[in-house]
Length: 65
Image (cartoon, rainbow, N blue to C red; front, side, top):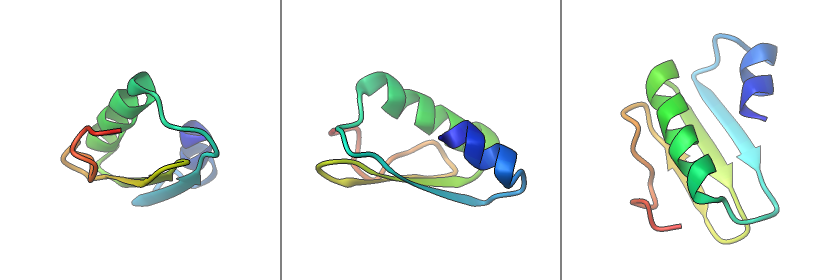
């Protein structure tokens, strides 16, 4: 979904996704890395909380997922 978001809008500064399951640790780490490399904000809403991945590679959940 993240890759498709960048293909559809290559200059996106913010991506927003909805996931009906919990986010796993590997997806959480990779999304933090992608946000840091692309210098964009990625917002993921999962079953329990909303994760805001910031441009500096940090997440609003403080890695508690």
